[in-house]
Length: 405
Image (cartoon, rainbow, N blue to C red):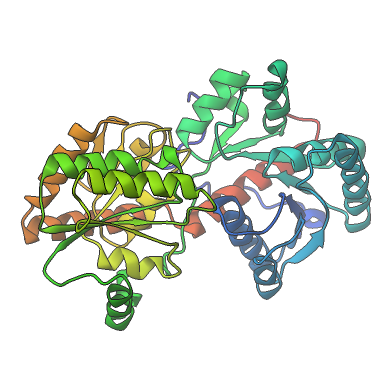
């Protein structure tokens, strides 16, 4: 991207302070709901950073389990039916948001999903409030007789459009014609206090190993991710069959979210490849830092491009090498040959070769990769960096009229 802000661009510490009247801006983030997910996690992390900086931090959504976190960090939640795609509800939500903007003197309206973005854009147009969006994914463009692209394109109408990776920035430019100078790349960030090897006790690791009935003396490979076809669990199973090693254990960690048919397909594939003692399907894990510490290497075998790829970043933060597919944003998060390996998507032969390279590493080589991986993530993908860069975009927008962009 010619004018998109890269992840390694230094933060501008020479920015002029905002005028005194704008010293405590009011920011309203809007999203469908506050359930577990990357969009939700980023929203809460930013809400906390805004509150800590003395800004007024508001979040509107249908609510959910993460609402309590907002209260704890000093932000305020406003309940609105923002998950609805019904045009009438979207228009009513626009009226409600416009009233909130006027009543709370909102300076910035930040939309993180398409249906809420339509309501937010209409409200911002009506009130003159600054309107920003975060482009989180490639979004499905098929169906609706060509109208789906028009629906998706609302995410490009922000005065500034935050893309969560260079890959997404290029997608927005190529597919939707978004001008590069309106794009700001802000990679997602993780909680480095949570994903810190030094903070995971041996007891947590032992407890998880016992729960998963992992025997001692085996190398452990893990693919975290919900059980859905594009996450590539079947590609990993085929790679393990080609590898032919019986001295390893593979964990497919993630909920099937009701996709019992796909789970059964995977279980049948495991049986057909005679990998019943090697591959184990587990449910969702509530202690992923301990799961990474229990693991020797982490695989991300997604057959569709990852918009960011949080698993690869979390694994590296815990000092674990990553084998990921070479598309999407993985080239931005994994350092090939230094913190892991990249393989062609959907290619079990290449994945088997990468697993073989990993298994041949000496203890010193693994330790060296772990050190580089941890430093790489700490330098580029912390939630503090994500929040600071997002707030820099906010300040950029506040320094010019809302009609700019």
